[in-house]
Each structure stands twice: as structure tokens, then as C-alpha cells.
Figure: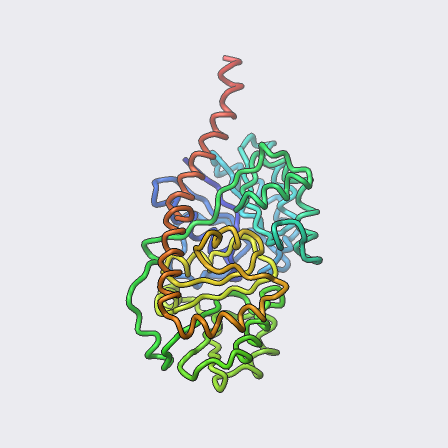
Length: 382
């Protein structure tokens, strides 16, 4: 099968990771993949898919949204006409081009699938005002024109349905992680940072990630000298936070780490992974930590609470994150038996529900279903 994948190659974010992992896996299963993206520069990621690429012209792009140039629609349309894929799969980049895709694919008679990433808040009921809320409001009327829209949880499916997207056009396929690559193993990372107990946050350093609550709780908890908190990532909030929470408090800022093996090494050596976000979709960083057998704490936003429910981790309340962490951090510091048990349960949950292998199998079934539907009218008319 030939899949034309439309997604992000840079700057680094969850959408980039999603596109990289899915397209690599589709290639591994023998499918042909063409990758259309807003990037002219070479990717800094070593394991980027080795497939045909088409660069779409743009005016501006960020981790959140992309503004295509006026030529982008023409380039996209002609590229799909030339490539003649069986299916177009768009990992939506929050771009005006997203709204033109259904018209283009209908004209070319190609099935069109979207993966809808924007984060949301508690139980999909109360969205944080701003970009996240607008994204759901803006996209809902258009997603019905896609043949299918993939979301990561039943909660998100219900939310889009309430906003008018036909339920039969929404498919729930959770994010998946490579449970072989991300797996428990010995790592000497604690010795490197002179840590007896290692706590990790990995992700963007931005207001919606609520890092300040974690940092305040860390200081207020009076953690032991041998406990260290690693902050992995960059973002707009980093310059205002880093000067006030330094190594004298046991906090080590590592910045963005492009080397995936290094990120895996950090997770394998960690005792606890913490994600205090105010909004999420389904965090790949959380799934990666769980797959490495790390005890996980995450707020009940997006689908993250669903991932950790029934004992696979600790679910935090967004309204009491700092106070809960202030209590839990010393507990997890002083009782390694708790973190060991939670890490085992986290790994088991990933194996049961969130493997990349299962994700790709569900995608293949969806592709085949759409191709079968497309062929039905031709058969009847024969």
C-alpha cells in the first residue's frame, strides 16, 4: 500500500515524534510511504524515515502551528496527483492547509485520514481557554469532511462528537510506543548526576506544562541531598524558571536532547517520571517512561489519566498538583519498593494497550476498510 503522509519534521514536538515512529513502522511492514512536510532543512534526527519526501513551502512554523505560503496548496495538490497514493494520512499541523485537504483529496478520489492532536483538559469537558479551545472549535466543522479522524481516547472522541463530528467518522487509536526500544534495563545515569534517587520531567518548558508547580513542590518538600530532579526540554518558560531552581536545590536543567538513546538512558535510570500538565492529548513522553518501567505521576488531563488509571500510576488533580506533589515526592524518595511496583505496573499497562505494534495494526485495518469502501461503488456498477 502507498501512503502519502502529511506531517511535521521540525521543530521537534510530539507531532514530529508521532510522524517519525508511524512512518518508520509502516515502512518496516513493507508499505510505500511518501512524506510531505513543511521543512527544507535536514532533520537532526538520525532515525528519520528513508522515503520519498516533498517539501511544502511555508511562511512561518512553530511547535504549535504552521502558516503555509500561497503556493503550498498547488504544490500539495500536484504532488498527490503525481504520487498517486492509495491513502492520504495527515497528522494535522494546525495549518490552514488542513482545511483544504478534503477538497483536494475528493477531487483526486483518494481516501483521507486525519490524526487530530490538540491537547485538552480534564475529562474533555473543560478546555483551557486559548489555542486549545479554538483548535477544537475551528476544526470540528471540517473534520466531518475527512473520511476518518483518529483520536487517542474515548474521551476525545466524545468531545468531538459533541462538537458535531459524526461519530462513525471518529476512530480511537491510542498513541503507541516501541516497547522493545523503550524497555527496562540497567543505566549508570545516577552515578553521572551523583543521585541516589532520580526524578525526571521530559517535555516542553511552557506555561501549559505547569512546570512551576513541580518546582515549587520540589523545594517545599525538602528533598534529600541525594535526590535529583532532571528537567529535559526547552521552551519559553525556561529562562524565567531556571535561575530560581538550580543545582543547589537538586534541580538539573539538561535542555533539549535530540539523541533518542540518551533520552532512553535517562528514563531507564529514573525512579519517577512526573508530568504536571494542565492540558495534554496523549503524552508520548509518558508512554515512553512507562515502557521503561518508571513509576509515573501525571495530571488527569487529556487521556493521561486514562492511561494511568486502576493502579498503573498516580493520577494528580490539576487543582491541587503542587500540594499533592509536595506529599508524594518525599514518599517516593523514601520508599523505593513503591516506585518499583508502580514501574512494573506501568510497563504492563503499555504492553496491554499502548504498543506501537498494535497501533500500526489498527492503522492498517483502517486503511484497508477505507479502500474497501471506495471500491464498493465500482463493483456495483460493473
